[in-house]
Image 1 (cartoon, helix red, strand yellow):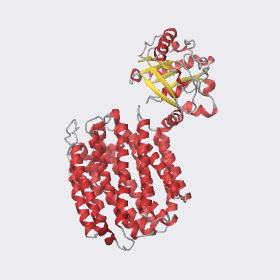
Image 2 (cartoon, rainbow, N blue to C red):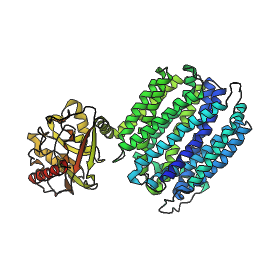
Image 3 (cartoon, helix red, strand yellow):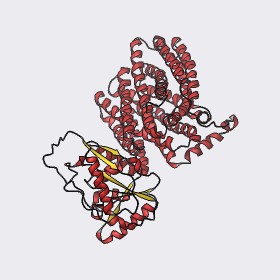
Image 4 (cartoon, rainbow, N blue to C red):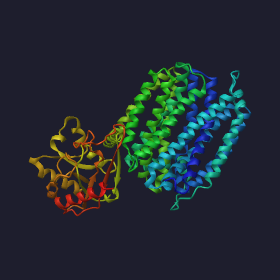
Length: 609
């Protein structure tokens, strides 16, 4: 992925954009932290965040139009040049102690980011392509978070280094930290230079036109929102991201006051540092999410991330140690990566090229409407005396609703993700020949049976869900029956075997994958057992093929296998390596004897390697 021309340059541009934006925000927030207390501090912090969000709401339609109409690399280049002018103005405000001007310039810096955003994220799909879209989103999320983390620590340390306890006004503080403004200018200049070197990936020139009158009348707003809601899965993902960012924004807005009032912490480096640990967590979580999306976008991670985030938000008010809270904020970040990477990748994947910029701008619009609304509510609650602890509980309630939304759509994906996380702790699965499984045809998946985990092992690298045929007695197990039913497994019994194969035929006719273990049971001696002829009863009038598979011997001896090799040296602390092979498709008329010979040859060939 990193060998693609322009990727490294693009990631540096992404880093510098976030690093510069955050630098000014941190300086303003730290100034507020030093001068004000209690509800006034919460209100002003919320207003700063609102100034950052408001431009994303106001320029929703223009930013989407620009990203769809013009080359995205050029939009990033000119936006970076705009940032140079803004940071010069910010530096002027610092030197002259104009707090209100510096406060207001936060809005202009955010305006630049709002125009920049759809082009920046739309460029991921153009630069990385569908093959690396999850990896590209993971890299961008990680780099952005490193920039945020670095900006928080870097600018807070510089701020504290120039701050003196004798300062009592905003003007005194800004004049003291004024030289820091030149770092903002320098970062913007470097970002502009690197953005000018990005390759133009536009494949087709759009002929869209933007009319100011239609924009003022709200015509584009209605049209673009209609484009967003055309695909319900995209809209649901945008709403979920909006809820997530709302929770995050409020938590960050109230934590400073909570740390000061409840924990007695007054050093901004400690407060910002703990919040920055969430950034480290997002880097880790984004990398993990990209790795766990190696074969397809792993949407189940988003549901698990939402559960963890909700539990953490509910737990923070019960914690009275900064060290414990630091660990929780780090874990909050990891789980945030689980939510962000899959949902953003899914939105980009489902969006058509011609509407990608509009949909990403609409994504920004909805998310910022959510965040802006939540910050307004936070400001009102704080103004009327509601403390940070109660606000944490309210955000936990929002988290519960987020969990509900994600489970409603992705409960099957969440189940498979849980199974993957459980199994990969002890096993490493290496797949060979996945290209032999057609993407646009029905597949009858047939092979050997070596453990209780075979159904999990086969499903993990496939986005299309396998309809496994399983023993009816196992199908009716109380705890697993719900999951087997939702997973559309096919129960098989000696009395109703014809109905089971008829059901399998119907699913193959509709283009699905049906998985059967012709041995009829798990191997007890490590050898292939006789293959039963049952699958031959399935009518062959469907558009598809038989794909044989062979699961290697790496799992033998584990608690999930019935075969325990004698004299085998088993290391309980070492992960088992299991190779899984998919051979070239066979004709639908392949007999059980021919299939067994095929898989025996696979066993002989691959186990000898």
